[in-house]
Image (tube, rainbow, N blue to C red; front, side, top):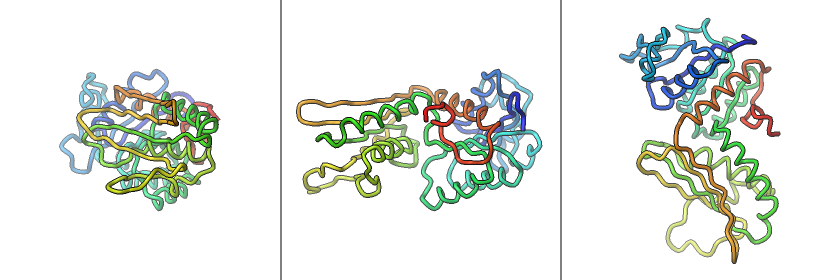
Length: 272
């Protein structure tokens, strides 16, 4: 694996996030755009990745399989769907490639499968690659330890564009997990994801979630700590997918020189 500029391939370059990732790699002087994958049989196979991303010809063509570029890349970036991601992870395990995964909506069984592969593959897995979001997670941990057991109700509110298929967002769930962990609570036991009808008064240990899907919202997350007389809100708002893409490229550069294992953005950023 390269110890200079890693050669990066991107899955799903026909989509909005894939095109943004192509752009982010091209803007990074310490990374090399090595390839991009579209769906098998796609009419975009053979298209120049730079032209596909709207930033000018780059001389690297899209392909419709990882096998076609197996010798050309060191790190794969995948922001697709759980089943596709796990298939790509298996490919990376077989061929000695590192991987950065931003896919959300994985089930518990799929998470366990990911963990199994991570024993053989250098893997960065994070529901949100934004540097700002990962700093926000540290702030939430601090706030929860100081406030959570002193009569403060905790609610997580997230908003995304109309095309997002999973809810709550992976980032919202991660925020809930961080808060729950800081308070020694189990999110599966104390997380409340629906309130309809006569649901009764709020349990003091609940961590509530509310979801908005509308328009072209890139991503907004607020965690509220509320008690009688005051409310503290910690919010992150993303206005461009580029913030996630740049974080993913940073993770790809970092993981290219790591041993097999599952890592998070806190490892990439040196926050732990």
